[in-house]
Picture 1: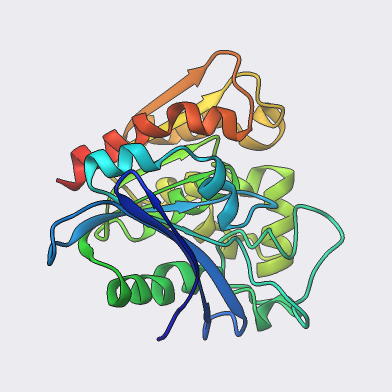
Picture 2: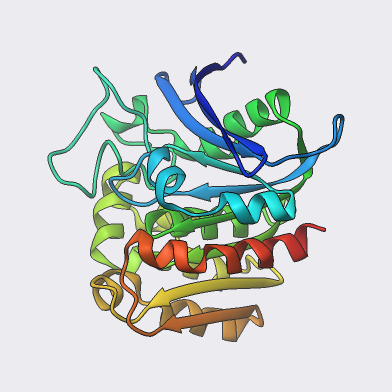
Length: 278
């Protein structure tokens, strides 16, 4: 369980690092970033996980997410993994919404994807063990957020592992992949055509099947080009309303799907997480 340091930089009194390691879950090298805020020697800090969207690597939020000042103020470790395995010998697809850069946070069961595309195990098991070992992380205080495909990952992981994550939020998430084209392509390709297997990776289906968290925070831009075709936050609102989950769904006028949107509301999400992390 060793890691190699790719780079470190000082930021707001803390350290922004990028690291790589040989993953047993994916059978490939994996890269991730971690921001550790200033802290007293020997102290442990709560951890916020951020899952990125289609085509992204760890670098998108690390470079554009505008989280470090707030994490430094609140004392939050911020972890950003990659979105898929990569490299020679790893299956890929010519389209942007499948294959490398589009792991959808599932453990694939279909060939050729099942050999390496095990992002659920990577994000929920292997990487947390590395973070616990190498960083001053309080693993009893974790939360999770994400954007788009990563919002889907944050919601499904947070709902499935509700005892682990004290807060769950998302920016423009894919809330019901079983009902939209992105999800049909990804879940069908990775998990096969039996849609019963998809339900474990569909936030709306999970809620309808009884999964629950005390509250959710979701921000969605009303100028998002994917709003009606792929995201459909009203489906999440309906499911949460029926299940009695306290959903704060904020439709933000004029905002699109970009990191300008994410950076604008990142501090709000981090403060919301910090209140629940203690």
